[in-house]
Length: 424
Image 1 (tube, rainbow, N blue to C red):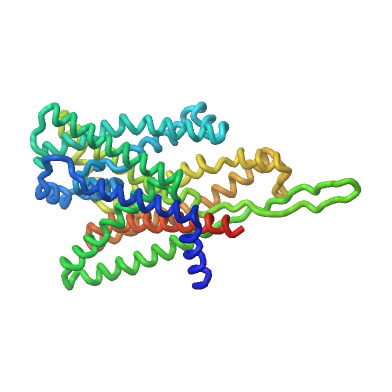
Image 2: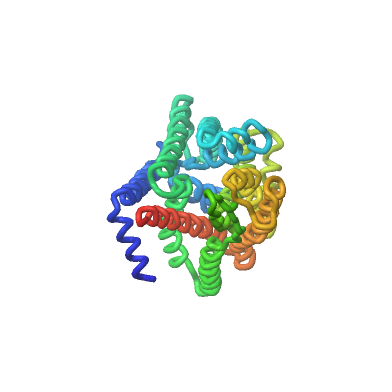
């Protein structure tokens, strides 16, 4: 096993194409970490640290900015505007038939158009989030009172940073290996891990040791479970019709269609967190500008999500819903049925056409349920531990761990696919 592992590592760095892709990923992450360390002008870092220490919401949002929000860097918005734009476009595939047709029926051209619409939608979302954040931070005394010119300059700076980061992520997706947006989130989590671990170690008391050991055991268990379940799949047998060549009859081939247990990967976690964070972000912005009646709603929602049991229950349900939602968008049983029929393939015992579509859809729904429940349980496990132990850092750490494991698995699989392609 070790020999195969080292052989693949050696091949990855000796093959020019794979090496170039890996170097592109590394270079993009270095540029991202450099941008995340460049703050916008006039930041009061002492007030900023105090504000973050008392706001769990910003801690979660900082994870999506790749660590840039904690420094109020020029990429403080991170890839959150692009993620929100992608969520809106995914919902649009259900609401608007033309968007769904472009996404599914027009092939690569339709996918390119879909991505372009997401990019365009990212711009107004980045402006809205940037304006809201700057007003909120100014009211908290973290940023000094700005003139109109300074305010517009900072808005252009943070919006430009968000668009630049989105562009870097797309370059990684196209010319590197793996999903660029997920890798940016991954890099921000990993970059903040040493500081978080050292803070926990130096501030821990004797009474905290059992809690930390328990969390470490659960973290290792989550890591093992995610690795195990990510590789699990339900194969659907596929057979091909016999081919007649003159007087000879050739036996049809047989293969299978793999249905993964975690078909949606880490996307439901990102979508669920984005939807949980969005109301508080909007309410905080409206409260900051002095809109009447919003402060009471903001306080209620903050109190609601501050309760780990309520937060965990809502988070769990959203993860399950988004798992089904994203799986239904990315795995079209109707298209699978048509492709099988066009290639002369069929599922043994199932009639081609509508019967195949219903059969594949039923299998996907059955397989998605345990995968969605599993994903929801390991997502809320840290929130449950927080309710028992009272350690607030576990919520961010557990969600971050889940994303890191999924991103690493996806990256390893794609590197292995590139290596296997060149071996053959």
